Image 1 (tube, one colour):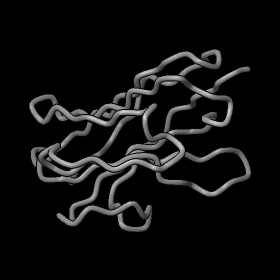
Image 2 (image 1 turned 30 degrees about the horizontal axis):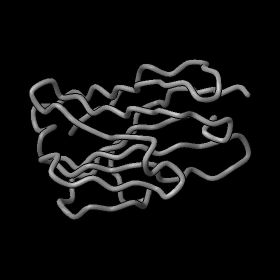
Image 3 (image 1 turned 60 degrees about the vertical axis):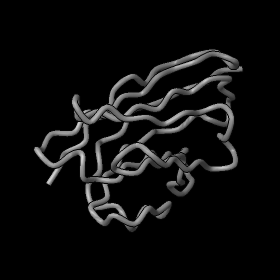
Image 4 (image 1 turned 90 degrees about the horizontal axis):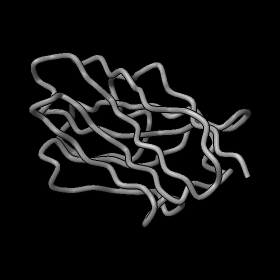
Length: 124
């Protein structure tokens, strides 16, 4: 079992950058696939990015491809989301999630453990 805790959210102007961190407690963090999702007000939670347990494979939503980078440091039990060239439409609460199944997934229902979320606000 892991418990993700997000940090690094904040307010930034369009074109700026932020790096989100997700520290996950638990001795088996390195065996979990990890993902980032986001939820804008009044909208459904959507997939942003995912990374396999080893960090060898990454996946991105088309809307963030080329701008966001997911990475992980298993020695620190942490996964990151580097967000560049931010746009107002990136404004949302960002959630970190862990999936124990070794198969990669982009569906929120496939993830087992969730953080509380961190707010990202991008102004124009």
